[in-house]
Length: 201
Image (cartoon, rainbow, N blue to C red):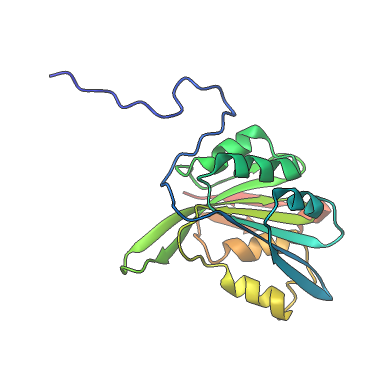
């Protein structure tokens, strides 16, 4: 009996082709922005994608959180706001990535796995991609119900601690701490050009 070979949906497509690989979601993609500095924090939900371009040129620190990857065109347009490389967008859409850090010069691309308990009591694994620039952080989630970022959102809203006084690099550090320990970061201030990282898996 001949065994059928199961081909990947990406077979035959050139590098950089944007195709979503992962679990389909029936939830609408949600994009939220937290724009902050030491004196305050503004939070809003993005309804028109052109609004994302405003946050690419601001003196404040911007955290853009994208919940849902199943609409490729939306992910592509968010990437256009910060000039993300097509290979980065390709990896963001492929939820089978291993944890890693890649340096693209103007920004770092980071892949992590988020673990939390689902409604049925089982452990849920969700891929999270982070794009860290000098004054922005973009997080891409698969769009499953729930995440581990709420404590960080509350710290930004309330101004508790020093998180609003520090840069996007500290926000990224605070974001992946509740996730997996597959990436260990020796943080010396990414914005100053001094950075060290090492990966474990």
